[in-house]
Amino acid sequence: MGERNLKVTAERIEDCQMVLNVEIDPTSVERSMDKAYRRIVGKANIPGFRRGKAPRSMVERFFGRQTLLEEALEELVPSAYGEAIKQENIEPIAEPKLEVTQLDPVSFKATVPLRPTVELGAYHKIRVTPEIPVVTDEEIEEVLTKLRERKASSETVERPVRLGDQVVIDLESTVEGETFTNSGMPYMVDSGNPIPVPGFAEKLVGAEPGGTLDIDLEFPADHAEERLAGKSFHYKVTIQQVKERIVPEMTDELAHSLDPEINTVAELRERVAHDMKATAEFQARSKLESEVVEAATDSARLEFPPVLVEREIDSLIDEVLQRVSGPQKISLEQYLRFTGKSEDEFRSELSEIARRRVRTDLVLSEVAKAENITASDEEIEAEVKRLLGNSEGSEATEATEATETTETTETGKASEVDVKGIAAQPQVRASIGSMLVRKKTIERLVEIATSDGKSTPGEGSAPSSQAEGEVEGHPVEAATDETIARTEPTDDTPES
Image (cartoon, rainbow, N blue to C red; front, side):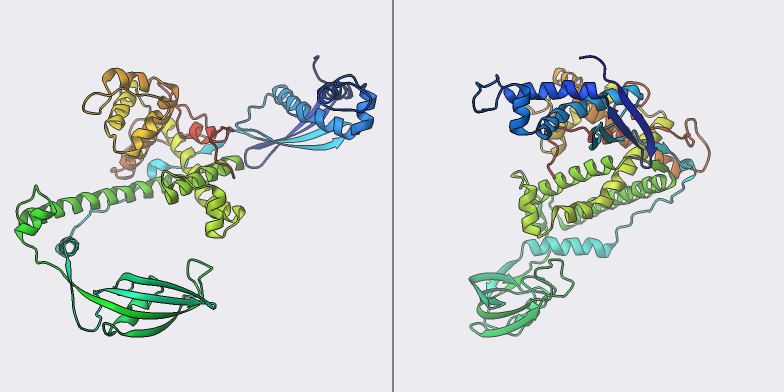
């Protein structure tokens, strides 16, 4: 087929998009309609003709010229779009939105997403004072108390119900005329227990074993579940049994039962204090990193196409479905039925989080380039080895999902040969490399933000540039290309 004669006008619009208005010459349209005719006649049953033998005029009369034209445009418009972007030297990052605007002459509009642009702010001037984590004696005692409560026993008592008791009840609930029953139901009478309704536990206090009481309660008007908000419930409760919880004193024996490696209460207290301090330090570090990254992101000027946000929403939906259902992932339709939300409502709820993620990814990628941050072969291999050794963790699965089989040693850790082989795979290199560059970039931002203000080599605000996503050194995909890559249609893209 010869070259088409396309009339193309291009206009750049906001959010890194280009609008192409394309008019296709009649000769190209006619050639495409002839191809469409051959496709249709080869599978259509037209009275009076053997399959594939009916002339085009008869096919047009039988199906209508409009049908033939629509069939032709299915192939013609995407093909003409490909020629138009080459003609205009446009490099899209994702599939365009195509819309036929006119049939005579055939014309269409293509809204094309382009690479984002990022102009960093003065991130080297960000200063944040790290929080010094402190663990108090009171906090340690709270943890020790909870450990004692884990070993609590219970004994049946013949007295009225108190807060802290465990009771066995027969429960009959009525809402909007419909009654539900639950016999022999164990229930913890803890203050603030929101199950089944806030205030229910407190209503049981003072009830005698064998006694029956009627409880009327109403869900708060601002309850998280709209189907329950403001609804009134009537409960008929029979107290079958009252059990008092007996919490043991902290002794060396109890400490040892909690952890066989610990022999005394002093050792347990020391272990608790150590773990709490480690947790507090981790939380302080996470908070510091979040503050620094947020400051760097807020100081930057960005422009990016909406498709990046839409694809990030797809990723978030996949994460939500995985989190709420575990290994046996429920479908989006099932989740929407369960929550009573529409898909548009669900996507709208996630849009701001998605937009923030996209902005953060783009800024971190640009900082990585400004600071010459790379991930070396050795670093990637070391990280692969670490993840493979952590067979209990989900990260190991993610890092090696591109590999069908992995030979391991008796200890369950991958051999050196395995590590090099896995790390050499493009998909693994891209994923691990991007993760390492991101981690090192955040560490660099924290280093800058907590420094004494003296400038260091590589530090500074980069000029406005196209966010190419590939850092210097070994070609490792950084956050930008990882974000952009999610815009490319794939078989595992969550349906929405």
